[in-house]
Length: 200
Image 1 (tube, rainbow, N blue to C red):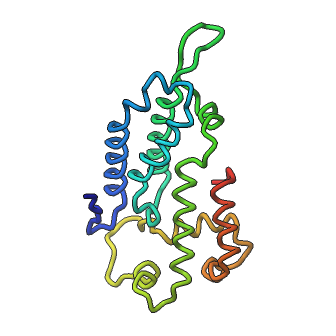
Image 2: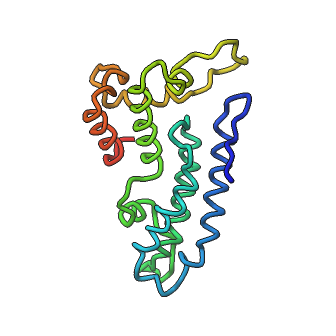
Image 3: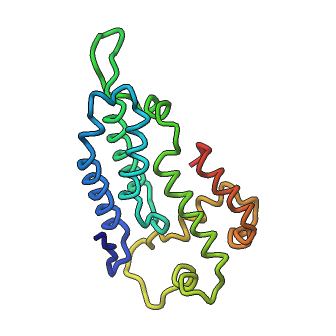
């Protein structure tokens, strides 16, 4: 059974490390299917395995992750590695040699949103729910409240709300995201825009 990896420093890095391990272990369990030669002409089946089996293990609890650029890169490295195994190498017509697919080629073959956009859209979707449940609910107080006490010396940590504001800043039009989230239809339109457009 999966257990979260909260620390007394409220660091998400250990959590993401464990999620990547879980994603890799899940890939290993289905690797024989992904590399099965008879499925080589049916990559869409392998992509479904990635989306429906591997990603749920990797992204469990991602709605509250505070991803910084380094963690985003780690997620993309995992995604690119798995997709390269799914689609296989490509033969260079000039050299006659097999090579790994470039990232642009992977993006053309894999039409679904990349893993970072999925995480950000899920964070926004859940944030909208938290904004609408009201201040009396425990989840609202936990995520929107300010903990007491003093933080350790050094740069302040990047928390979930800061990440959310950075995402929303590209779209807000000067409106507070908590207010906009009260309109479910407008909020879902915004979540879909973040998911489907290459802006993040």
